[in-house]
Image (cartoon, rainbow, N blue to C red; front, side, top):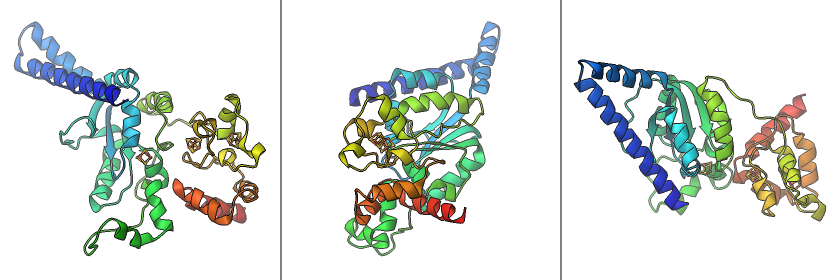
Amino acid sequence: MAKKIIKVKKEIVVKKKQKKKSAKEGVKKTKGPIKEKKISVKEECIKKPKVAIISLTSCEGCQFALLDLGQKFLDLVEKIEMVDFRLLEDEEDAGMDLDLVLIEGNPVTEENVKTLISARKRSKLLCALGNCAAMGGIPEIKNYQEGKNTIKHVYRYIHGISNPPIKEIDNFVKVDFVFRGCPISGEEFLKYFPELLRGNIPTIPDQPVCLECKKKGNKCLFLDKKPCFGPMIIGGCDAVCPTAGMMCQGCRGLRPGGNVKAMKATLKTMMTDEEFENTTEIYGLRDDIEEAERRQKIV
Ligand code: SF4
Ligand code: SF4
Ligand code: SF4
């Protein structure tokens, strides 16, 4: 996998250099047939949607899921003007207007929050890239466990270190679409990204992980009295966890039409209250479940 990612990085950097070189040549030579070249390079840039992939505080695993697509990702990059993608280059983002921005990670620092708000202002569409941005992700465990005290496990002297609670990006900006999962599914990215480039917001079908799990021919974990969150979690990951014999822990988030109350009651026949809570904290599902329960009570 590492070799594949390095190859993709190299190819993208080479392509960007070639593109810059062609653009420079077009600018230098302004007479005769070369003038045509200058126009075509410029037109090419105008036509291609401007896209930025911005990483806030994160493990960058969702960006690696994109690089891991290999040639398929390279083909996609051909169709866009990649304005920013930290894993590929060190160049500063010049702050131009964007057609689409993908945000990975959590807005933890003040700088992260500024970057996020600026990205929203600059872009026609903004998408969350992965579980951290959309649901708080693994860092959100801090909110439920020791809160501010968690930092003591990392720093000996904590005076002056900013340590805010973890918040999903939709607490700061409007989010048009969510690429779900930890990490995101590369195949799902290939499916919905072209739609977003056309300015349309796709809808992920409200189908549980169980649907894909059944298609795989897996024996349901419930039959062995083992817990699994699959029925209330929105599918699209090809049921990777139950296929590997592990329960779905809900990294893709709740289905809009899922019956959270009934599902929780079923799971609690197989798990203690503490086990249930701990599992829902892994991917930031806990606050979403609490919110869904509040809504169900009101209805
Ligand atoms: S969602 Fe998962 S893979 Fe993506 S940045 Fe967060 S922790 Fe990393
Ligand atoms: S193992 Fe989990 S995801 Fe698969 S069918 Fe059973 S409950 Fe659904
Ligand atoms: S099975 Fe559940 S935890 Fe595993 S990737 Fe899919 S949604 Fe995430």
